[in-house]
Image 1 (cartoon, rainbow, N blue to C red):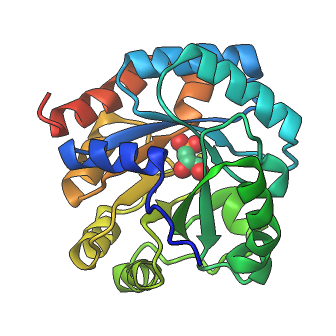
Image 2 (image 1 turned 180 degrees about the vertical axis):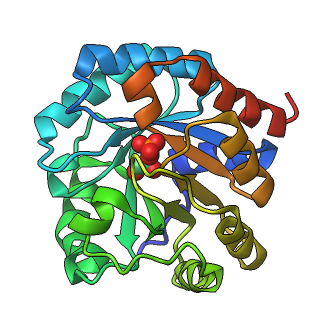
Image 3 (image 1 turned 30 degrees about the vertical axis):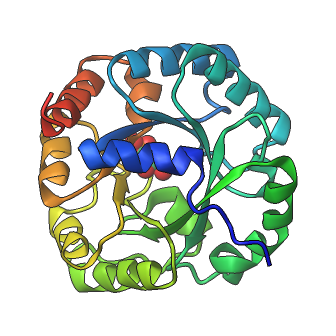
Length: 255
Ligand code: 1GP
């Protein structure tokens, strides 16, 4: 056995940033934003203070498409480029890391662990940094809730969310992601973020349906360590709503 070195470079960057205050991830879908657009969106998002770029979102991603997007984003910005996978087809050595995530409340065993057993050797072979993460889908869940055959955590059941999150921490996962689903009409309820914060010592990332500064502030005050937005830049680019959300993140960081 060779002892591992612990968290990799990207994970250490995220944790170092999170110690200073909450951070923001810009999610870009390489299917909707071809590489040139992806590079431009990333550049403008990072200029507003976004801390990392997540690449992912659609089903049927190819390593070529992911690779082209990762290359374009890396050429445009100095922050980490992290794959938010929908399956093994999302993996590309051009990115810096991959959210190595288990969809904890899925009824599909492959999404809880089996796809991971197939993907792990490839992740190792191409030298992608895996970031161990428990992914918990909260009502309504949108497309990931359907495709992922998820038993969504009801919006009025913070205890259920806290149970999944604590199980993730006890299983050794190093981040928890609370997901309302891309394009959700409302983000994860603050009561759920508060309940998870209460029991967890690892960072909480929250995404899905965050469209305004008011929503961002409420989630940050509830204890989110990271916010993810995707739809907003797809629909409006880096406009006033995005800037408002980033202003809240900066404010929470004391800047
Ligand atoms: C989706 O949580 C992310 O996985 C982002 O959601 O597209 O609603 O911002 P939005």
